[in-house]
Image (cartoon, rainbow, N blue to C red; front, side, top):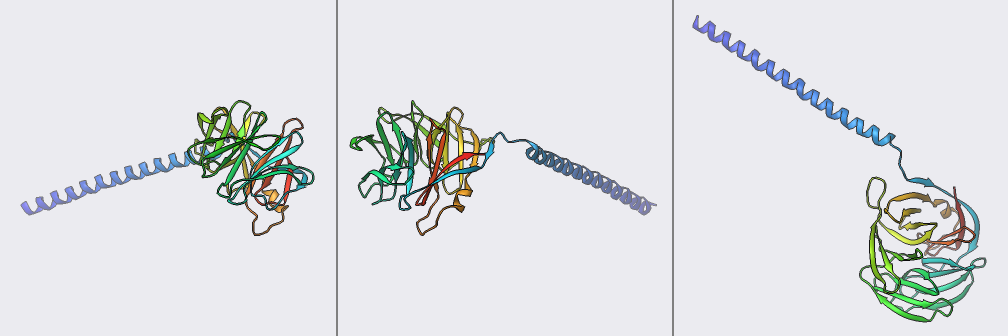
Length: 282
């Protein structure tokens, strides 16, 4: 009798354990199901949610000759001409260029130790920055005579002028706004996409109709940046331009944006490209 009772108790105990285990297993499966369901909902939400960033491609309106030995770092338009800053040590220069022919009308060569980068016009003065030399050179627009030199910390990549402030990029997602009178930083702006992810490698800059346009280094894209929030408003796919240029051993990335605000003309080129393009967005 005692042995029988012991066996019965053992059987009841095992059944009890099995029941608990089964319940826990079902609960675990349910939790896993909830997690999977939540994850799937998130994926669907992200997929269906429309991005606030507009997507553009370009039409080519005109093609013009461009010096394929020009390692274009900065570009701007003024009164019918292009002004170009070219880089690399021993080859850095500032140029005034005739658009239709690509002819260099005026040029100064920088010290061989200077690696020139972006350039911008402020009044009758041209500001030209350097990559690692931490120097900004200020020239007279007409004579190209050096007026003064500013020093700054960090790297210099792209440069543009908003009408009030200079804006400089340094290859990160940060834009530095500067007082042209002393080249001191007035504010910093972090550039992000619509999910607040930083957009790095901002290079040559141009101020167009209230927005900052920036070449994204090592890509065929130009981004349109809100000057107040730093949010990307648009992405311009310029990859079609690569199908038009003549390649050589020096041919490098898209880099160079100039804007004729009076006639609403946009000019694009690249480092050591043989062509300059007039384009429109589509």
